[in-house]
Length: 259
Image (cartoon, rainbow, N blue to C red; front, side, top):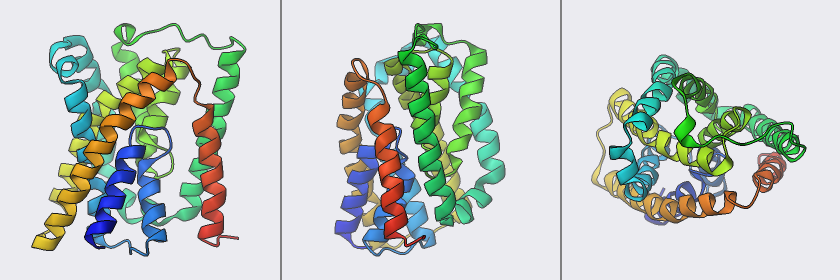
């Protein structure tokens, strides 16, 4: 991987991290297109630059994060199952799931179909989105954290898993997206620190530069991507993301020559 590749992947990470389309899968997909091998450093790079995207959320919602005590407590509740299961299954996730294209592509399609079904139920008033983030309970926060663990599999999407379960629990789309943003802060920072600790890497100077380029590219693009999504969901459904996931899955089958 060269510096241009690091910049491209950083931009892709920032654009996709907070959309329900799986940023991790996009990094794997575009790494494949760019001819970048999935080495241990590459896997660490993909996890680390997510912290750059998180920086954008800290900047955007700093006041919310430090002043809303109830929200902070709920974020802790949501983090508990993710932290426990993430620590237990860290090795399996990184060494097995990241290499299973069939599983990842299946996840893209399945989650896309779930989103379409949910939006159909919402349009028919079978599910009424009438809850705001201020009404989030500790019980719901735990459920959200547990469901977020499904995103250990690239292709599911951490943001997608959180938003889907919150829609099922009848929270409004923009509030669901916002909570997925805020939950990303402790989740991704924790995952990044765990990865650095577990891999015990001693980075070369060139590798450090690659990490820095990816970090800041992800942060800058994520800032605008997150703002756009909140604005978009105030007037639109999630259907466009569902169709995108399915199209990406079909394209992946062709690119990876899986049939």
